[in-house]
Picture 1 (cartoon, rainbow over the protein chains, first blue to last red):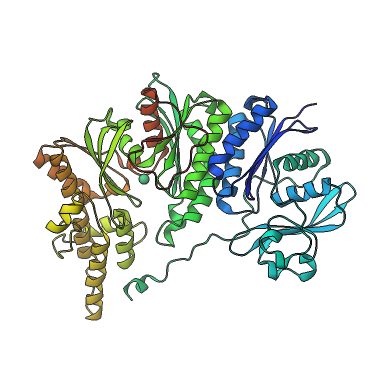
Picture 2: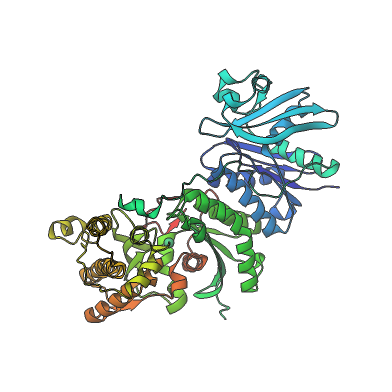
Length: 224
Length: 350
Ligand SMILES: [Zn+2]
């Protein structure tokens, strides 16, 4: 049974897309470009589909990482996924982007607990703690955002993946060399959860922060 | 109903309206708009992050609503047009990404179009093909532009623009000062109806002789705004009541006067007998009235689309897309950017 899945993610510094047939990754591509998601994503999708020798009509589902990640780029991936789903009449499966990084680490045979900490800008990281168990990797608690220094020292001392330890080397322990989401790993995670159960989210962003806006001061203050 | 020409889907997300429309030729088949204006009200102006979040939430439901209104399926679409700029970068990206996804999924051509040119083109949906050349005046919360349009798909030139605030921004700020609700355009217009437009002589920006040399067709509203603030402050200090209706009417008059005066001047300068006005501020009754009167006096024919087509919407984007498709222009690439400062001369982005 072939179930063709297009996976995309724009929550980290890579614009990444992959095609998975339910068994293996057919094609995958990552463009390290944190500022031009809107330009780069569709050409990247087009490229992986061409490499896989498939056309949009061959897709059975779309998978997308819903962050947490810098908002502007994150929205590009999510709206692309939902619009593809609508135009092609296929389902959109969403997962936490940090889980995709954790899944990649677990599939490399790592053991025990580790941390994923990605760039949240403004001197903060998006982070979550994981443990590898029989049958897969499990997240310990909800993803969060904070400065590296605000994390419990015992948590920061864990082996850490993501750009966090590269940006703030003094604050983290051993670096696990997986820096950004890879759509191939994200596809594998979604296929695994579709088969074995596990958290599939609605395709809406995990913002973790309120919009950056101050209500205007009292009306009279314009005069002062 | 028009059966000729390709069915064009238009997507707009440059500011605080998510617009999705279907146009065939110059016929509007569906016009769905979701606005986040109320979410910005408590901030007194458009907050980019709030607008971007709202676009993402609204995009799929708005596309679905446009399909239902048009009685069409997305797969019926022959071409996809989208605003690629100018506008708020994060907001633009939502529409651009959605448009690319539709075009790529369905194997249809994609056209990234200029938001300002699309405003001008909206009028073809109400009044048919544009008289060309025409002078176009665009006034909204985001823009104040005077354009020379020789060919809406190929040749649009900027004659002038605001050097500081957009006209609509000035309305918002003065409304806030007077304790009138956001958005300021409608509330000032309403308050002005009971006031005397000649009560206070507020300044007309960039109309002095020395300014006209360098800024003949440019606009400035920050001096006017400051003059209104000072005038109100002085009354407050003196413990006098503020004649809100007179201030609103006099401010309204100053804005409408300078906009129409420069627009008519531009027509005369270039020997053009057609003026078209677009953008949200065209809802302002004094601007319409003064434009009608001055155009009639100058022998210029005036075109103003209905208010619904003057504010941001997908219809104007689809309308311009249809014109570009009709000329047989090559589509934009899937690497099309969201260009927050897209120059008006660039009608279509590659
Ligand atoms: Zn506009």
